[in-house]
Each structure stands twice: as structure tokens, then as C-alpha cells.
Length: 148
Image (cartoon, rainbow, N blue to C red; front, side):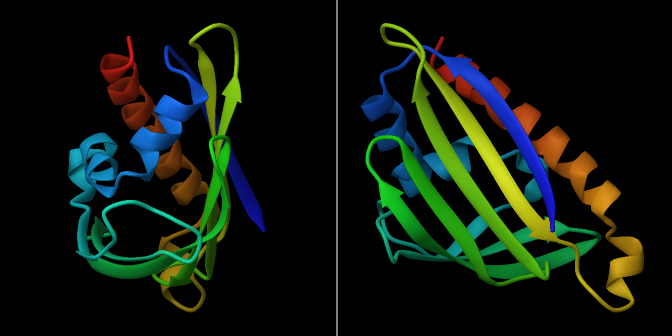
């Protein structure tokens, strides 16, 4: 299984960042616009067992996916896991680590497997790593503007 990790230092308390990230409207605010992310079913706030159904623009077409929140440890960690979607598997851990007074390090850790079959020849691990790198860079830049 492949992995990816990105982190950013932000001016916020762990609780402030946790509360921000579990608000599903904020997920849309920090997602790169070119992903075309939209929810078809979501709670207002995430919790253990919450289901997110969404559409995302990827690889020339709209992809559908469903994620479930499988770990919820307020205010330092929550994990979402793909139930269905374009990849063979996908797990995203959101770690919030205190880094001083009113400062945190947000660490995004992904474990994933590219799709199989013919699609796997187009959507390779290297291609996905490049997309994740670009996407999380944009996401973290947006967070830096929101939490200067």
C-alpha cells in the first residue's frame, strides 16, 4: 500500500482546528477548486460513523465516492476511510499536534492503492502522489490564510 504525508504549521489551538475541520462546509472551503468537490450526502459535523457521499472531478470525469469516519479522537485525530470510490483503497488520517501556545501542526497522512484493471494503467501511484502533493499544498495554503 502506498502512502503520502503533508504537514503545515498553523496559528490555532487543537480544539479550534478540530472544530474547523469537522465542519463539512469548511471541507469545501479548503478543497482545491479544480477538484469540483460536492457532497451528495453529509452531516453538518463529522463524528465517528459519519458517512460522506460526494462527487469529485478526476481524470476527465466525475467520480463518486463514499467515506466513513472510522476514528474520532477529539481534538487531535480523525480518520476517514473510503467505502466506495475510484481507488482500490484510501484512508486519510487528520492529526492535530500541539506545537506551542496557540500553534498546531496539522499532519495529513494517506494510505492508498491505485485502481486496478485498465484504469490502473492511467491512474498510477506516481500520478496519485503528484495529485496529492498539489492538492494538499493548495489546501494548506488556504488554511494559512484562514489561520494566519
